[in-house]
Image (cartoon, rainbow, N blue to C red; front, side, top):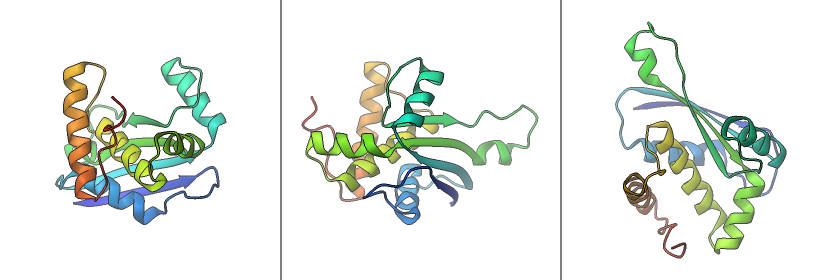
Length: 156
């Protein structure tokens, strides 16, 4: 698998992972998916996260991660359509706040949200209970392989 990852840093803050960390987490979430995969991760502040959440989900608050699957026109070659995964938007201040509130290492929370976002780009969802169970199990499995404990253990 070849991953082409662009990380955009719209905001500067302490403890934001570097491109190499994001690449590690993206590759783990892809789980050996064959071929080339292209995606971007944009690290933002609360203003931009709130704007995107409001514009695309009708929710007026800054959220931790938003996933935007690639919306490509019909007629493109299959290899191009399959390689374009989409974009993630991750809000740095929300990640920091949530990690502190949950008593988790901030880097572990960054990893979890990156994996969570990539799984959304792959078509996983958590709107229905059955879907949430599948997605959360997969997240826990991927994170365990990275040496990160279950992010849901104390959230029930």
